[in-house]
Amino acid sequence: MKPVELCKEKSSFLHFTRWLAAFIVLVGHTQMVASLTFGKEMNYNSIHWYYYFCFHAHIAVIMFFVLSGYVVAYSTFIKLNGSDEYRFVNYFIDRWSRIYSVLIAAIILTIVLDFYGKYFNRLYFDSAIIPQDHRVMRLLLNICSLQGLHGYRIQFGSNSALWSIGYEFCYYFIFGLVVFSKQLIKRKILLYPILLGVSVIIGSKMLFYFLIWSMGVFAFWIFHYKKYHLPFFIRIWLCVLAVIANHFIVYKNIFTHNQYIQDLIMGLIFSLILLCDGNRNGVNGFIKRVNTFMSDFSYSLYAYHLPILMFISMSLSRIIRAKHVEFYQLSIGLSIASFFIVRVLYLFTEHQRGKLKALAYTILRNTTTIDRNR
Image (cartoon, rainbow, N blue to C red; front, side):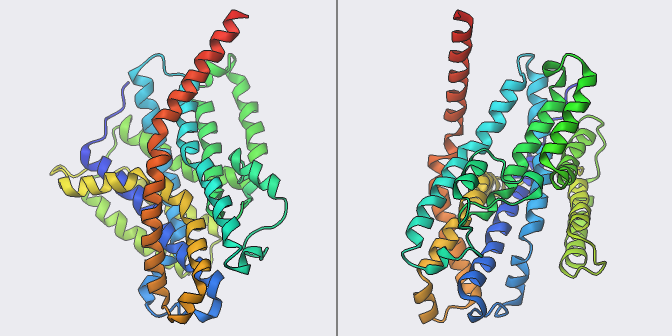
């Protein structure tokens, strides 16, 4: 049975959600960087609503987890239904190229900016901000997308944001293992001990957050296969509910829940939003183009922004102090600078993802040819 195709309006809404999540993380991290660089010198309450907006970086990552589960499931099953030749190796190259079209460049960018940043600010030597120990191990784990095993956030240099990429990569693998189990495992009963082994390796925290990621997969299944759709107008009220729930449950923490329970509740609300129909009146062409443009490099924005923010803030710290820059002014300036720098980097990395996939397929074909000739 073929899944229901996305309408243009809903596709645009997914693009909007993707870039909005990345943008919230970007702006949210400006507060963290300002705090690390200037501490109590910075007036964070100069614009209360701006500081409030900065608070939501973590919830934006949860939103992205749910969206990722939905989009990966949709992309995978559309290709499975479109061709009998789509196999696990094709899926793996799709997911691998998605991650590594940006990850390696993000690590190189971090190394370069951290190296030169030390000449401008001694805070780059502060182990409380940037880990100074086990650098080779941290580098290797980040390169292998294993920086999130057992819930650890194994930070490399100034780029602490890469932790969620490790989560994503493991979730891609588990999802692919389940979907392509018939291709990979001859006896179905063996799938369960294999999944148990993977669960032990990744640890309980990553497994719990896989449940949140899977909410996006379930939303895809219900919407596209079970064909259960919530009316479009419900989306507006669910978005309002998400804002209210985030304010009281996460920001105010009125129920004193631990973070995972808060993330689980927000993930459930986001997954319900994904069950809503698109607007039958369509979507404005300009808005659609903006959403597509912004979402195209949302992953790059997430992966590159933090070392850029740190470098600019710390290298210009004396000028910023001398000018008595307010927090919101610093945040806006850092966000705009990062936005344009990342857009340029995107053109040379994530935008070239197709070439990376082609290279992977070339290597695969050559390897297969060599094996057959032996």
